[in-house]
Length: 442
Image (cartoon, rainbow, N blue to C red; front, side, top):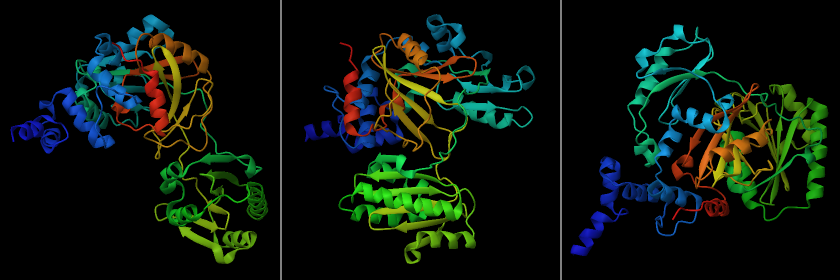
């Protein structure tokens, strides 16, 4: 009886641990808290004695790799000076002002464009592109709430625990790369994207809306892929017929788990009844053409399901194209950059694409799905790798972020635990591979 009571109290996976986690998390030790949090997020118990995956080793590092300099490196304000001493002041975004409270912010002392942010957390940012339209009160409310929080308590990321929170203003910067443009496909068979069903499902509500149940049923029923040559030839001819009837179209082909093709065709203008008639005529499959209306946007979609392919036509691309400042994030292991990911965090539907150090796309994804249209290679990619190696030297793992601007490559921040170490890395073999790259200190 005594053993059962002790297990109930001390073991993090019993209801007592969950009760503490939900109501009194600050009474829990870091290891106890992380054990409960891990089970909630990942669905299984973490092995503290034999961590092997990327996320498991990040949790281990939280407890066992606590160098005082990490606090400086995690402080967005102090990290600027720390980085400048290693890679040069020319790679640092200028700081304009520093404030202990939001009440000290005076717009008259700031330029027309600037960025306000906190130094001690993630996401507390207010961007001013025009002081005439900038909502200072809203920015103050957001930043004031952030100043009250200690980011450490959320996922027990130790470097944040002792950062003294402040607000600072820094120079507004812009990207060198132009806003992405949707591809125009002359030959749709030249743009085939190979993917898998789980990844495709990730995009279903974003790209296919009301037509997804029919597509999913088709993909589930498909036992094997018919002859690829004949399938692509059919789609190419259909695309040619549609282009002649409608005008220039954008088309992408998706090979899903080697079972079926999905052709996504974007129509540049709104569909009206006369255009639907021309589409129906071009497809020559009136009985199989389904008209779908997206309630949110009012756009008219058309879906055609054949034996060996699926055609989806729509007027507005469901995935929002990237606009704004790109954040280039390099995963570094013991001072060696291994992976870069490019995030479209500010879009309505965020996406993230991963690349190796030769800028070849990796079959890797985490919280957000990859964009179908790959972002371009950054102009100063080689310089990024060099600077990231300098900044990450001697650290088992750290993520180094940069911005590529017209003037210079600029340092962003240092992140020790990607997504707190609680965002599954898929497919699982990449979670293991990234874990192998982390050499735990003795």
